[in-house]
Image (cartoon, rainbow, N blue to C red; front, side):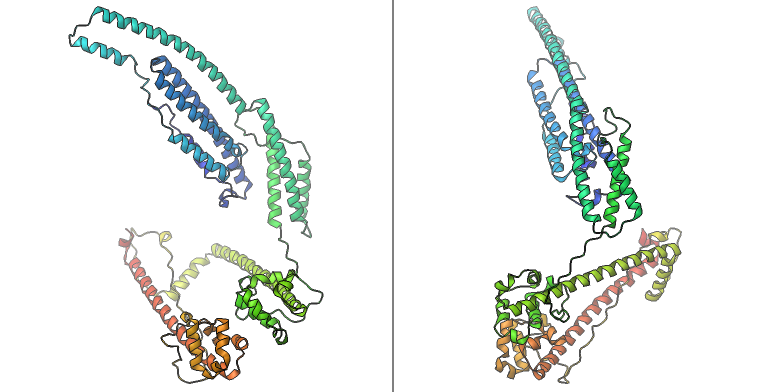
Length: 600
């Protein structure tokens, strides 16, 4: 027998549990529209009222079932006790859910921690084992009467004494059951009065309501103070304010100084409410709109530019093939930057070697610009540290200038894109541009029209493959032969070369420089196959390794030969993949043009 109603509590809370606090999850539950926020708040309050009402109806129904069980089967006390224990456990778990739903009572979403606790309690309620109770719709004495009549139907002798004893036992049991039923009715009436008193306390007894109002007033006061602090932080940097915002701010300040009214009590609860709630909700909507305006017009303060009283002259410098974002500089890039900043006579004392052993990267640039203790940690002289500090300030200022310019360009491009999309939608230019692109990049395919062909809106827009273009080839200065010099057992894929293979390749091209100590310098800097591209496109390693013009030109010519062949092979592989994609796309277009059989 199932005494529970058809609607479970989990079904009511499931839509609300999906609306998690946006600070703990995705911001899907934080719409910027005040009307949408008001609708969600009303929905949460309705779910809270529906949950509390159904929970109390279920508990009253369970107690009613216990009363009926005691009336009909008073002799089965153990089974009734099992049902009472089940009811007590379930009621305790359901009452534990109520304080976790306090955010729904004030129209706010449930945070992630309370959501987990509610789901845990609901799972515990589902795991409770409901005891089996006989059906109350039939007569409980019917089965006993049938058992007494069976032997009489078989003409078995039953003594008169046995029959009288059974009648007397039945009479005593019925009297005992009536007495227990009257006692149980009194207990249930008292428990019902306690339940009604508990429901009254939960839904708006005067003391509980006053405590709730005081608590909401204190929270509103804290939110008001936080709002003033937020306005002081956001609005202060703004040089000028819109007159409309100024008038709205004065009106809202006038309303804030007025009488405090409770806005968090739901409208549909049976709580005495006055007619000032609508005015309070209107005031809250004005405050939310004002906060949205402040956030929308707020500008993030620009970082202050770093400056030094004795700033060195010149433009900022950076490593070759690197951007101004110093946070992505590797240790080798930092060493290269220091070699560009410090002149030759300030690098003779082994400063670069000591810093290379520390394995520092571009993240040390802000420390050099702001922390004077870095001079003692790096073991630098006053002149060396002054140059590094000034150039670090220049790099940081240049980084912020580039980022400001890039973000400005991005905003302009986004605005232009929005305007362009509006024009296309307004003037039907999108279809004309699509047809023009189809004529330029798609060969004509005869497409028949059938009665059952799909409408044009369902026809997917084709994705056109884009042809690859080869990268530019580098000129070669030394040697007319196209075949480059490669290390033993190596290919033109220079990125897979090991440091030893790179050293063998240099020795095959300029063996006289290896004898002069070039090999030791290459080993000290751990150069590998990836530096072949750097040699081919820049002269950075020429200064780092201290090479002359002629041997470096020979090395650069061979590196450019390898780079040209590597790029040509890479382009061939991409063109092969492009032809495969193009053939697959043409086959798809032919199938679409064949008829509606492919749409079935």
